[in-house]
Image (tube, rainbow, N blue to C red):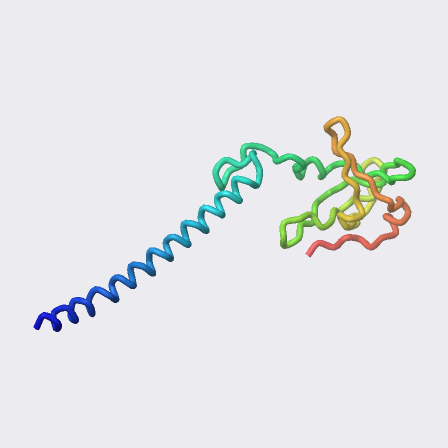
Length: 149
């Protein structure tokens, strides 16, 4: 009878013990992953407060209004060839291009042309964003008009 009681108790406790060990291991793995994620988020920059809010602009970053409305200059002549009207942002959240309004006369004329972000050099001088390209004004004006989808 003693063996039967031991067997029944073992049959009842062993699965419960195994289940509790599995839950404990899963909980440990989840806590470890959460800790690693929090450490990564905190390491992204000192500007982050917790994991959802920014205290300020991270070093090397800039605002959209540092770009939109700024003139773009031809690198070799330093001549203004257009004004950045909008940003084209890829699925990954990175800037892939800009929409430039070609030179206008008294705000009239001109057309919107798309330029790849790779064709633009962004320089900060005296806390001001400046933009340069190797594309000249004639090439820009002869480019196909940018079509918004």
